[in-house]
Length: 114
Image 1 (spheres, rainbow, N blue to C red):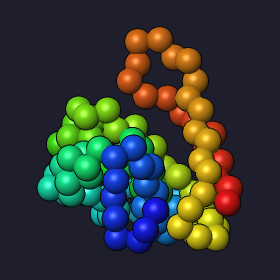
Image 2: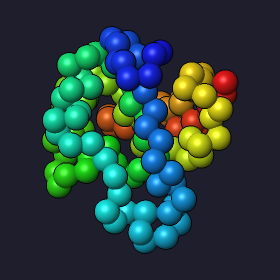
Image 3: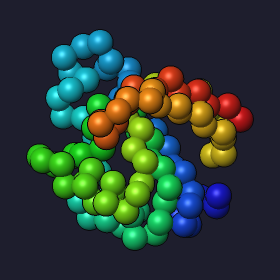
Image 4: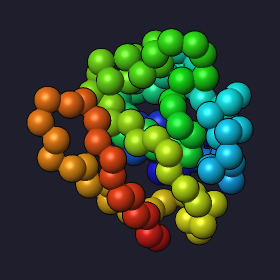
């Protein structure tokens, strides 16, 4: 990936270091996230996956950013940690969900390596 570009099928991780607040009430308050416009922009470019360190992809009230991404098949992985430890812009990511019937999400054990 070239910095500043977004191409169809790519998987993107957004590093904010917000995971440093995990375990405190602050983790769920005022966290950074995507606006609806940003989510639509990524969805229109056909990304396959978006991973973040925050408890939700949504910066605004409601779930509009979620719906914009999920409506185009984008996989969302929230609550990641230590993205700062990935040494460069390219990595491998494994985030395997549990086989839970009738649900639209699952906890994962996410592992990234260069």
